[in-house]
Image (tube, rainbow, N blue to C red):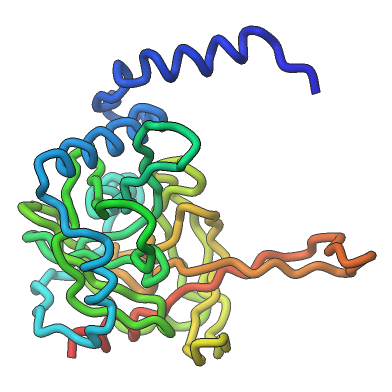
Length: 283
């Protein structure tokens, strides 16, 4: 495929002057590149100040099965559809690690999702987001572009794919946890699919099922709201803005396989962690 000179210029321009874009975007308009660079620079700054907990240390804390952290009491109330996105977006976080790719000398930041459970820095995300030693520190960024370092893993469960983390010196806007949502309940997801930060999609709870893997089995909740890579750990919300689940994975269904290759994609199942799994870590 022929690539134009303007494409190469764009790449060179981003490398040389990318930091100039690492600023807070205008209200209501999301600049994905600016947020990506802001997160990376924020993690770099915290790492340079030696404020981070190493990924090796965090990995050793993944065996913690529960925490005595108490959820704050948050009154559940109906949210007008025009206010829903901005209200809930304030509680959604970008979660990622600072690492070097081995192909260059620059720092990079991975990107997944998470959400706040308390004002003083307790957040939730997936186990698989945290379960890595590739990098130096793990952190999170709120919708205002402020970056915090992960200081501790409070509790985690690999089969349920849930981890509760504490951020250092954070002040957040927490989401309440609901009880299990019935099949047919309307839900929304706010996540960061492939770096499209703070994207909201809508759908319904379609069923509950047992998911089996090499590490065991766990209950999962399927929804029809769309999401993709980078959405792991995002909240699944009911109409009151309460969490009824958390994004975990996708499973593609193909009609046929030809010479070892899947063909004719029919459906993508959106597999989520039910809110029950988060509640269990709090016992």
